[in-house]
Image (tube, rainbow, N blue to C red; front, side, top):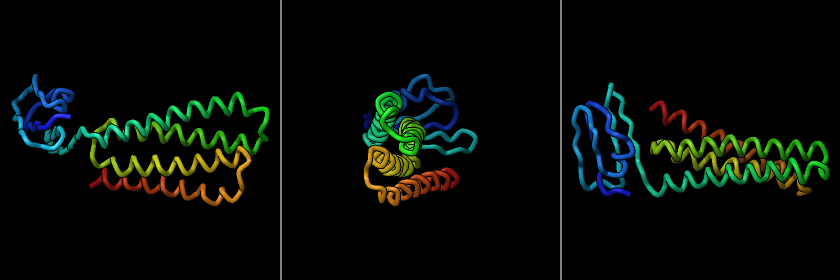
Length: 173
């Protein structure tokens, strides 16, 4: 992680270079500012103001999204091959729903982590936590866990809804 940031007014530097704190190929000028925490690129072209940050927090979000995605592939394959013969249609439906939500939300968490936009951090964690609760309860019920877990599943869904809502409000502000 670099210990400096780059700000520019006109033109766009190579994003990777700016994040690493080594701006070059800057069209239209720019200025390198030392002393910032992490590396930040502020783009003010056309009046837009976006801040991209590279930090350990973003790396943890990417790791969380990758873990959710990897586990989703593993659990999807397990359900399709090992559990197909042993589970009833209702339980297979729960398993399929859990895998589907997990994979879609893993992609969303990955996208938010890779975007390096600070406004997406809270949303990413809410989506990751919500889909973990939602999917885990469905997996457990499909494997014969108590059916009262079905009352917990909507809590995970509510957390996901809050995550998407936070993302909408932060994107529009």
